[in-house]
Each structure stands twice: as C-alpha cells, then as structure tokens.
Length: 179
Image (cartoon, rainbow, N blue to C red; front, side, top):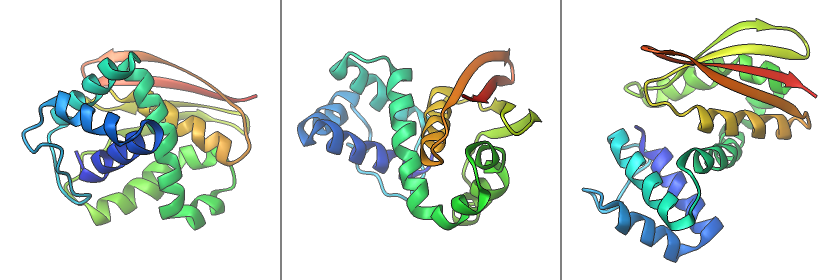
C-alpha cells in the first residue's frame, strides 16, 4: 500500500484527535517501522490494519466507521491534487464513473507498482448508477466515504447502499442515487 495513504491517515488523526492520539495509535499498533512512513514508499497492508485496529481501540469506533470517515477526508486531498480535472467532470456520478480513467491512471503514472481497487460501472443514468468494487483489501467503507465526500463537493446528496456480491474474488456492488 502506498505511503501517502499512511501519511494522510496519521495527519488526519493528528488534526482531528490530536498528536497524543496519533502517537498512541502508532505505539499501540506496534509497527515494524515505528510509524515512519514516506508518501512514495510501499508498505504492507497489514500495517494499515494494525493502525486501524489500534485507532479503533482508542476511539471505540469500528474500523469500518473509521475507514468511512478517513475516506471522506481523503477526498479533500484528491481535490487539492486534481481539482481542475474534478471540476471538468461536472457532477458526482460522472466523477465516480471516471475514477478508473481519471484518478487511477494518474496514480499509476506516479506509482507504477500501486495496487488499486477496480471500479466497474454496471449501469448509469443521470440520477443513479450501479458500480462494482473489486479489491481483496475490502476497503468498501473507505470507498463509500470517498463517494459521499464527492457528492458533497458537487453539492449533490447521494444515497449509497452496498452489499458484498462475491467473496472470491471479493466484489461489492454499490447502488448510488441522487436524492
């Protein structure tokens, strides 16, 4: 997993909960690198799970709830990096539909070895879409947070539900509707 996700998680915890909580999270996670991450580095996904587990213990929030909140936060980082491209797309559903072509292509240019989830649009009209998320990392709560923040960015309320449709390979179907 790319280091930028780790550095952004730690920065998010510092901003939202304070430096003490971030330090406690890192200490409790007992990471091999003691929480020393660089944005361009590659780190085992297991370290993210350890950080989330530690933060879950500290905050008494479930890891999926924390992933959702972090996903919402990380969209603001994407806006800083890709604001012009995001604005060109026009709306939340259009942006979500273009993640593979717009965001993932750019991320792969910067980090050719990155392991990204895939998003496949099954159906789409002007007010709704069905999307399949595929990733063995099972971060659909994180993707959900990103999508909700995307709707907020475009001043569109999105009703999003999702369900696991396959365990092997792991796939989740998102049903997204403008409300």
